[in-house]
Amino acid sequence: MSQVTTQQREQALEDAAFWFAALQGDQVSVNERKAWQQWLADSSLHREAWAQVEQIDRQFRQLPAQESFQALQGAGRSRRQFLYGLAGLAVALPFAWTQRHTLEASLTPGTRHETAVGERRQLALKDGSQLWLNTNTLINIDQQAPTPELYLMRGELYWEAANHAQPLRLHSDYGQVDATASAFGMRLQDDSALLAMSEGQAQVLLTQLPTQVSVKRQQTLHFNQANSVLNQGVSANAQAWRDGFLVADNMRLEDFIRDLDRYHPQGWLKCSAAIANLRLVGHYPLADTRKVLNTLAFTLPIQVREITPWFTLIEENKNISHS
Amino acid sequence: MQSVSDRHFADFYRQHHSWLQRFLARHLSCQHTAEDLTQDSFTRLITRQENLSLIDSPRAYLTTIAKGLLINHWRRQDIERSYLESLQTQPEAEYPSAQDQYEVLQALYQVDQMLQDLSSKARQAFLMSRLQGVRYQDIAVELEVSERMVKKYIAQAMLKCLQAQQADAS
Image 1 (cartoon, rainbow over the protein chains, first blue to last red):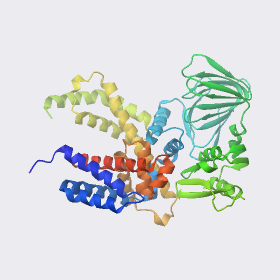
Image 2 (tube, chains in turn yellow, orange; image 1 turned 45 degrees about the horizontal axis):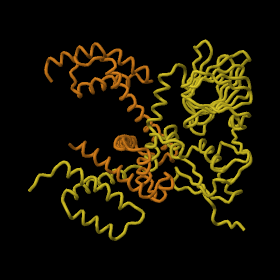
Image 3 (cartoon, chains in turn blue, yellow; image 1 turned 30 degrees about the vertical axis):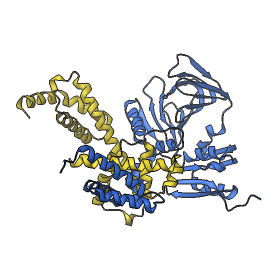
Image 4 (tube, chains in turn orange, green; image 1 turned 135 degrees about the vertical axis):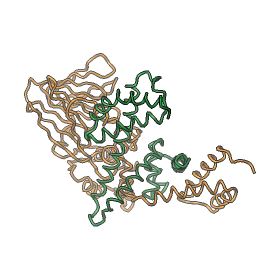
């Protein structure tokens, strides 16, 4: 008998994995089943590989499904990073992201503050300035520096200086913000940052550019490492969250759901394409995202379907006639 | 191991132990964990069987090992924390025993390792299918890929598990 080579063994494992994926599919044809049985009958190597597949499958079946799913997603912060990826904004490894932020935080000066998904927090600094942290946010505050310095690593904050002379430096991946006499909101998105200046002014130094961009009262700067766009006006949502509201002013449903998802502690929300362009107006309380969805389902031709406890799809309600 | 390299190692250990432990302690809230990871770093060094005298920059080398262990530690901590969080949403009467919790966590660490090198979508597809029983069709919608791609992801993930099992056995 010929010796079984490593290559043959590897090929058998690859085949077994393929057959496993095929047989777990939604519809398995009789022919597919026959072909699989034929493959099993072909060689003892195949049967050994299949036995290993079954062993791994058993291993997964023995895990408590819901807790394991949540834990392996990294829950909380890491899960959110991952889910944003699913929303099509960026694709990143969940853990790589969390660990990058954690590593960064531990290597950054100052005290670390972190909020969970759905949590908001208000902090007072030594000089009397106020700081609000929105959902799923990670910052370091360094009060040892001559003027206070903030490091925003994830999420969103709102800053109100105690007095008109107080300068503040805010660091982020995309650039450094030097603000004076200020009240402003800053939000990190997947590949950019949004600075909304309510009061005062700021100089922004992008990470990869030597020149500063100046942002005045009631202006919004959208920027990443190398580019920036300055707009007039500040969205109500730059600070409405401090009072626990999401404001929709003729907002697309898809954008609204994407925003609401940031506050949704249980898994993620997704809006199906058919209803993405419905428009919304109103103030929606962030404390209970489930309730907001139920309200929407009451007023719009949509339905809320929990595909799994961790994945909620907002889709067209086909039971409502549009006559 | 030969006595020469034993002696080399003892010197090396004495020379680098305390700063490495300080380095790790700075990143960890628990002194015991810092001690454990310091020991683990040296253990890694031994198992790699490098010739210690040939390492140009021992500090950089040890720091790299220690950082890897630190990240691994945080990753496990993340899993542990979210597992315990998810238990809190259950009625107390249904809590698993401490022993069961321990065993589930060990299993989760292992699964996490097995799926480590997969793309995030493949990992997600596999977890949805295996742990939540979501149909390929629904996974495809969620991940914005074709059903064929979902099947491919599941096969990739299963192969990773098989290969990990194989590596453990040999």
